[in-house]
Image 1: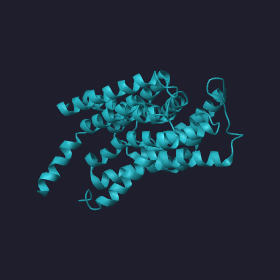
Image 2 (image 1 turned 90 degrees about the vertical axis):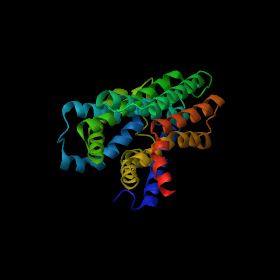
Image 3 (image 1 turned 180 degrees about the vertical axis):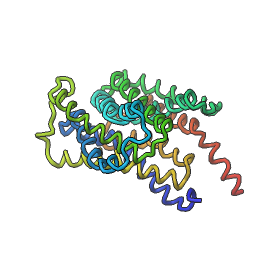
Image 4 (image 1 turned 90 degrees about the horizontal axis):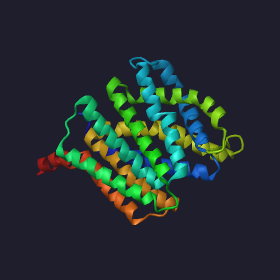
Length: 306
């Protein structure tokens, strides 16, 4: 009954989620332009998210989550994930992140669901996976011909997508509620910030930390976006969209993120777009739509209305 009570509100929640997720590589790149490092951005994100979510974790604890589950969740959506994509954004473009990481996440989550939970592997889903792989190949080829991208950065984006898929599968395996999972990941990742800062605050590869010298405007904007909007609010809004529209239609918003993020990277950061990159957008977006079987999901309501 709840699913279709307020469809317009669900659409609004969904599009707000898309904008928050799509803006992640843009905000991160802007932070780098303001001299912050990957370590700085990661610390600002999880110190903020950890402090905000600490009361939730103190109330809920780790009930129902085994040590292996905690490890997979923190690696999949916490500091290891964020460091991989943040370093990737130092080496490659925001547009490539927008295409590669979400697509790899969908691909690995689909394959993992089939292997671990015996989900049915329909011909449509198989076709969609093949299309996503073809799109990734196009983007990968493009990285060898553009100055703003590198195969090393793209490989880290693939790793990030794989780690996030592990997090997604762990939620299903141990039946962890989204808000509880957010509290676990944010708070435990906050504990990793101290050793991370001590080890990499003056890294010759990542650069010297600017947390003590950056302007308060830079620190505040990154902390609010990374720690509050991206880590917490996006999850809450997405959960509301799924609750109001249903999981099938809610999944559509995740499929929109890569295209929106690439357009933001081109429009805001001025990143050049090649023909192969545009082709990758089209093929990956179409592959995501097919993998989610959205055409099949929308067929029923259309026929019913007729």
